[in-house]
Length: 127
View 1 (spheres, rainbow, N blue to C red):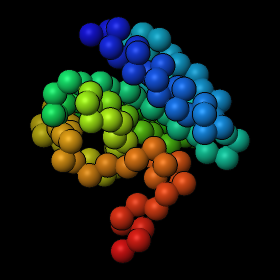
View 2: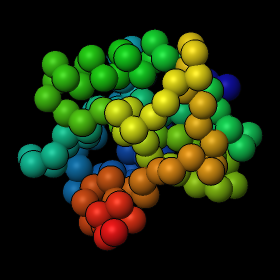
View 3: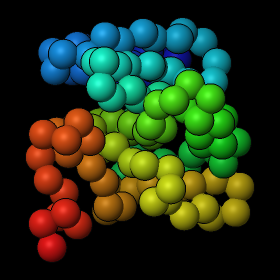
């Protein structure tokens, strides 16, 4: 389980670096998994990976992420790699809780990496 998560974190680091971001990974269970910035934008990212079609993220994990991002001055992002589907990015303020956790599935509205980085408009921006 840890190895799959660490592998996903390293993969996301490479994606962000290829788009001009400086990226730092915080190994282990800290407040965030990845911090990335390019001098204009800063992201604090919690990374999850699953082979299922849905994942439950503890509310506490998201609260830690948001709190850290506020203090750091970055945008909090929840990044989920659904194996065999790909990366999905979520902004915590757009998520709904299901009690003690957030339920995310491949059907939950998400951002692509390009939409997250402002390289592509989201459907909400177009409409």
